[in-house]
Each structure stands twice: as C-alpha cells, then as structure tokens.
Image (cartoon, rainbow, N blue to C red):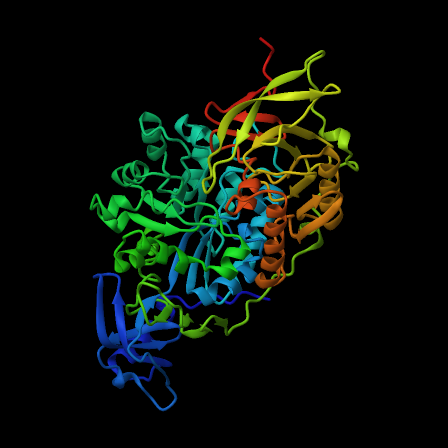
Length: 600
C-alpha cells in the first residue's frame, strides 16, 4: 500500500482560517466538553473544538459559527477533552508485534503519537529492516515517528550483530519522511571518548535539524556524564533514581522516566517534581519496552499517566509529560501535543482525569477507537521472505553444546554469575561456588545455565555461562530469539538436553520464544519476522505470551515479567554483567572476563 502523506499546515492553512472565522463549515465539531489545556495547565468547562482536514481550526466556548449542514457533531457531554497521548521512547519490537499490530493494540488506549527506535531489527536486518519498519509505520492512522538506530552493535568489540549501522546509513535515513531523529546513543563510552563513528552519527543528525536520543546507563554523574551531554544526546531514559532525573534536567537534557512491562522507574524519579518542586517541562513519560500482554491487559501510555498520578503527580502535570513536553522535545509543538488551532486533531474524551478511562479516541480528525474497541484499519506492509528467515544455527544442537568443562581434578569451581534484578534493567555481578560432576560444572538450584547461541551467520557458536534469580526448578529450558540488542538466541535452563531442544525448536519455526519442561513444549510464541515480531493480532500474541508466563511459573519463576528480564541478558551496555557471543562482559569496565575464576 502506498503511503499518502498527512497534509502539512501550509497545505490546509486556508481551510483552517476559513473555518475558524466562520466562513466555511467544519468537518467535525466536538461540543460541550472540558478543554484540558496543556499549555496553561488549566481545565476549561463548556468548550467546543472545530476540526477540518484532520486538524484543529478553532477551540472556544461556542463553535456554532463553524457548523454547517454536513458537519459531524460529537457530544462531549461534560467529559474532558485532552490531547492524544505520546510515547516519547519505545521499541515496537518489544511488543512482539509489527507496527500495524502495535498500533491496533495501543490506539484504544489513547496513544496517538509514538517515537520509536527500531534498533532491534537493525541488528538483524540492518538499514533494510529499519526501512521496512519505517514504511509500515507511515501507513498507520496515528503518528509513528521513527528514530534511526545509532548503535548496531551497541558495544563494538564486545558483540557481533547481524548487520552494522554506519554514519552513512544515518545520513541516508535522515532524508526519509518519517525519521524524527537518532535513536538512543547506547555507546556512551564511545561518546565520552569522542569516538569518530559515534560523533559522525550525531553530527549527521544535528545537521538535519533532528533530535539525538540518549542512553547513559551508568551511575557515574561526574565528568563522564558531562562529557556525554556535551557530545550531543538530548534526552535519557536510563535513570533509576531521583538524582539521575535531577542531573539530566540540570544539564539541559530531558529526563524520560519509564514504566514498561518490567521497568518501574517512574516512582523513584518523579519525586524531583512532586517533592523537590523542579520545573516539570523537562520531564517526559515513556514506556521503552512493553510486551503484548501488557498492551492488551493493562494499557499503554494511559497506564503510565495513571501510574504517575498514583505516585503523587498532579494529573495535569502528568498529562503534560505525556503530550506537550514530548512534542516540544522533538520540535513538533506546532503539530501535535495539544488541543490548539493548527495542530493535528488527536483528541481523547475521558470522564475522569485520575482514572483516565479512554472513552473516545480521535486521530487526525477521525474516530479511531471507542470504549476500548478500534474503529479503523491498520494497514500491513508486505514483509519479504528474507525478513522471515533469520534463524541460522549452523547445525542441530545437542546437550554437549551447552557443556561447561571444569579444570582437571576440580570438585567445585567459583564462577562469575549474572544476577537478576526484578523490575529493573541492570543486573548484578555475582560469584557462586558451583559443583562439578563428571568434569562438568553444574548449576546449584539458585544458579542455572545461560547460553548465547549465534543465529545470524550460522557459525555454530555457543557461549555458556550462569545466571541467578529466575528460581527455576526441575528439568527445563527456555529459549528466545529476542535477545537485546544483538538478537542472537538466549537459552536459560537447568538441563543441557532441554536447552538443545528449545534452541532447535526456534530454528524450526523461524524464531520466537519457547519453554520446554521434561521434554515437553509448554509454550511457544512464534515471531517469524526477524525472529522478533509477529504480524498476528496483539490479542493472539498476548494469549500465547500469557501461556509462556504460566509455563515459567510452573517451572518455579515468580519474577514480575521475567521474560523481559530474560531477553535483556545480552544487553552489553547496561551494567553490571552480561553475556554475548564473545563471552562474559563486565559492563562496569567494558571488558571480557573469564567465566571460571582460577583456583586459589
């Protein structure tokens, strides 16, 4: 399907002016509502909105001069009229859905603008994959702006991706119609050390007049942080505490605080506003990563706004953080983010500003959802075969591929172990004394095996290590081709034969997530597009994801959204310890370390 650009303000300015002045009729008038004005932080009762050509022409107490015989009238009946919600930083692939199905899932929740970074698919399919995501995004009835991924690989030298992103790729993407800026600059050591490649990507973005996204995953707020800010990133979503939020805002960045499926970083940072009283203009709400189950069962940006309010934030300030603050940050304040003349007519009707029920959603002047039910089509891109055949293991795996050999004669060993942290992206660098049986190192119940299986170039490489915190019991294994950010295959299990079963199963179906227990497959979520996404409806994918959660619980795992934790264990830019196709990575020093420590 060919993309038809949404008319810009210059295209329709004469119509907007004519309707506002009463010389021409509006397409639609919403009347009798409470105008939530995010510019002035006011609620103004008994107001009406006139819409023409998908944009707002007039807002005032009386829009009768805009009504003609064919004007559609929507009665607000005293409900709040608030701007459509914006997600400032997110990865569509984390929903296990294509852009079309992600849009279908979130539109009923009131999300009308998304700022997406498709760096997951960039690691698998390179610039071609980004273009596919970009092209499908432009087909949707809501605003999906694409940030060009900056870091594939995220940590050069510490991982191998399917493709690499170059400064030339960034410069090319900046000419595409839906590109809004540069995706999160995860290689923060590269920026602080003035790496020419990273600076070239930032320069190409700034020359295009677009926004550079940040990702500073370090607790160090000293000179290294100052160097990172000086390098150009304009926002950051990796903060986890109040001091992080304050430091970012004081240095002129936007502090993006996230509530995703597994990231609960709003409550600990919003106190910079609610308790310290800092100016909220530079704080923005986002999700970062939401899987399909969260989208279907709990919500999207409406969930984040409700959570911010529950954390003590004034409802109008919380709404500003999910609307006008986001639009201003990306240079789109004249186009989205508020209910004011000239802006796209992205409007929500809700009867309560605290509980925020999403009763009617209008995007670009059209009703797109009502009472939780979508009312429009979300067109699909025709994904080619090469985007669906991306799992290449090189050979059929067996239990021997997952063996960890102990030093000769050892009865036990001390191992470096990745420690899970519930509801947060960071891990802990732990040590454990593990038993040796028949010359092989075994888990000890609390600690089980993790493996990174190369799947882009069919090298047959398997990197083995240990992870703690899942709580798995019995004979089981879980495998996923969603393995941020290089997206090889992560396999976690208590039994090597089960790990081989799970890995081979994903090669058979072309990618996804599976869990085996005692030789039986308990759950399978097929993700055939790049091994990351499904083009099935969100409800179907969510149902399979729910089965996966139940299967994990049946194997002893009670962590909240543990699948998200599983998928991030190869993310070699967030401390403290991660696994890659090259080995075990200490992200505190960005150095490889040995799995087993020498005997004393």
